Image 1 (tube, one colour):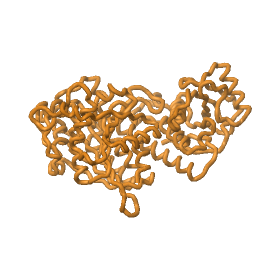
Image 2 (cartoon, rainbow, N blue to C red; image 1 turned 135 degrees about the vertical axis):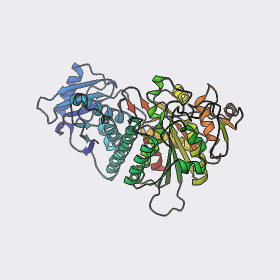
Image 3 (tube, rainbow, N blue to C red; image 1 turned 90 degrees about the vertical axis):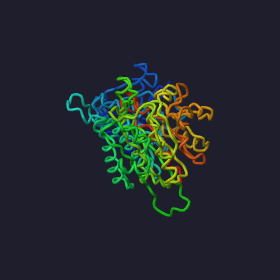
Length: 496
């Protein structure tokens, strides 16, 4: 993991393989560079190269031994963003990613206008640098394909103090959690089976002071999680439910109880409603919701979360074996409702419905949030960079949207129109697990809502679009993105 340190040095005095500063659109000189001579030289280079400061602009200049840093890189930030820290976060992530192009093991960053003096901006910078440095290369054996690892980042950020130390600490904890989620999503599906992921969750729980209980198939069958178990009937890999719990120190009087629920389909073939081959390639990522919940839970003690938090991971494989569940099957559920299988590729809601109903009854939470790569319909609606948010609770909606904004993640509210519930109330069972072609993200949320008491403050986050990137992003290489972790972490920092 990349080490990040905050320094009071000017960029002209930082010793690094690569020194990075930034400029917004229409700037004629780089920002955050205190040394007048260096600033003038970089401004001259910007003029010669017609550097305009757009988010695509990058200019490199060799120092030729005149400064401790070997090279200087000016990156364009484009226009300022209204979201706190967003331009700084993306700029620092881009700098960390570009470091590999210059074989830089160390990078020094000067924040624009000394924005690191504001703790939120410093937090965004540290997060960006650590996330931009992320690589998943554990299986590369050819040294020529491995880029130089970014070992150290120095951020020239002005004043120090407890608030800044806290911002840096939160950024490091959060970035490490996002990287954990990325590692899990990027892992090969035959290596990350439900059993293997349950073992990882157990180890991470032990390392971060969480309680952890793993339920195998006999226990799940005994408590009545028939819908969840039906999904895995065609797989040789047994299902697991992981129950993580965090309790803060001190008296429990007046303490909120929160449940996070994550969909963990470690590989989704689509079942007998088989996916097309090219759609199946990234289905190792169908456990990204469970990865986000596990990663978030590991941060709670470090962030000083004041609520009692439980995390449930529903871990299954959806395969096509001889005993696979079939279209037309009628399934029992933990809640007692019956569900007709209209499509075996709508399996995530069958996993979640049992978990949501069990958590509602057994844990009596004040609030509950589930995270799932649930529907292709949400990707059609919002594209590959935004998650969909469904809830009937206005305050919870606003809290999660604000947390996503501060975290630099895109979250957009989508409707749960009661009229659409009729699309699921057809056939010989209480519900069908699909509601037709139109409004699929909303009908999926409505399906889940039938397993949650109306009075419970509950939200469903559909991360199907941004959970896996087909191409490199400014803040992440192609692959798992760890989406959802930063939003949930920001939210849980504020819940008491």
